[in-house]
Structures are given as structure tokens and as C-alpha cells.
Image 1 (tube, helix red, strand yellow):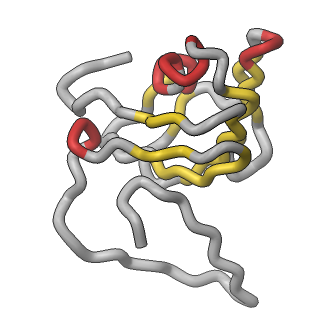
Image 2 (cartoon, rainbow, N blue to C red):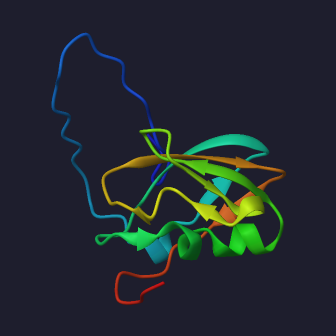
Length: 111
């Protein structure tokens, strides 16, 4: 598993998954994004506004759409944020026009 990358697990019944290891500080673990669809994980300890978290990628014109697990979308071209806050412990899908790097602010900073 790669720090910051999101993963999908398909099961036939409800299960709990525990992942052990050292805490990955968000500011120390940038996430490399490829052209097209990417799965990411919010590394922060508190919820953060999707617009703020994804601002650098959006400002460069690279973000097409972001989606949460329920299909709620952030559509920057339409200035629509159906995700609201991104939540720790949840994964997200991002579609980009090109390679990019997502760098989170530290937990001591806010968006």
C-alpha cells in the first residue's frame, strides 16, 4: 500500500479493516497523481473543504472532477462543490488532465 493512495475493497459482507503503522503526516507525504483517474485518501486528522484541499490542482487547470464514495462531486468548471468537506478515513477519486502532485497542509494549518 502507498501512503495517501485510496483503495477499494469488495466484500460479500460488512467487515472492519484495521491498518497498522506510523502516522503519515500530511505535509510530509505528497501524493503523485497521474493523468486520468486517481484514488486518494485524506491524510489529515480533521475534515477540510474540498475546494481548499484541491485548490493548487484546480488553479493549474488540471482538476476535472473529484468524487467521494457516495458519488458526490466537486465540479470546478461549474463552481459546484457537492462534496463539501473531505473527511479523514474516506477515499476520493480525482480525474486530472495531466500529472500533478497533491500536497496537504499540516494538521496545524487550515484551508
